[in-house]
Structure formats: structure tokens, C-alpha cells
Image (spheres, rainbow, N blue to C red):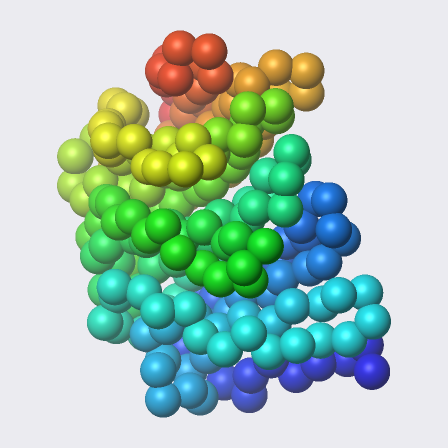
Length: 212
């Protein structure tokens, strides 16, 4: 059947405890979700759709010890790789893991950031168009900035920060068509909207606009 019940209980109906992404080359889909009904509630679970049927992949072991509440996935446009970002109930820390489609395993975990106002998501992830490099972004607590890191297909870089008008609370990261640049639209703690541009050649950010 095409219909698959993933869980009968989520941690919080006011958060987005699930996401879905397709592997670019294979056409297989992954659904990752927070499962409050599971014994391992801090750890998200996942299913794989191969075009015909669903298969449970089990749980993804993460560092967080409070209930999983927020999930975001991004697909590499050049391969079957997918990156997951996850955040727990206490907002500390964020974690990213990489899906290896060849071995059907999650791994290469890295943690970064934290959020003090846990009702907000405070994270984003996206791949550049042609390099296979991904960027993850997370709130960094009270300072007026966000924390970020890059994945080059093999290893994570060293996390760094980028300034904003206030604390980073919400964000959407979108890649450019035709280049490896990206743009982050961010909402801060005072409800200002900022646009921060990612230069995929230099691997640097530039705060382009901040509107109250």
C-alpha cells in the first residue's frame, strides 16, 4: 500500500517533527520523524520509499537527550546524499547527520549552536548546486548571530558565526540556479527580516539587507 502510518504520537503538535526528501539520482524518498511513542523518543525514526513500498529504517542515534521536536532535510543535487538537521525540546544542541545511500546508514554527525526561545526552530540546511557541499545554519543562543558549518562530502569544517540584527529564530536557505551561491532569509528575535548571501566560491556570508 502507498499509505504508511509512521507514528501514532509526536512530541509537540506546535513543532515540525518530520520532513521528507528524495534522493536525487535513485528516486527513493526518505521520511524522518520524531516519534514520541517510541522508547527512544529523543532519537528520530525514518522510513524509505523505493517507488513501490515503504521500509522502516529504525531510529537515528543522536546526541540530544530531550525529545526530538524539529527536523529538516536537504538533498544533494549531484548525488543520493541527504543531510538531516534535528533539534530537541531543550534546544541544545542542534545536530546534523549525513545519509549514505550506498550503505543505507546515517553518520558523520556534528553538533552546533543552541536556542534559548525553544518555541522557534532556528535552523536551516541546503546544498550548493554543483559542488556537493552543504551548509548548515543554527541559532547561537542570545548573541545577535547564527552559527554555521560546511560539509564537503567527506568531512565537516570548523563552525563559525555570522552576525545578524538580533538572535536568529527562523530561517530558510535557498540555493541559486546556475551558481553555488545561496541566500538565507532570517527572522530575528525582534521580528526583523534579514537576507544573508552565501558566496559558494569564497565560503563566506554577507549581510545584504535587514528590514524592520
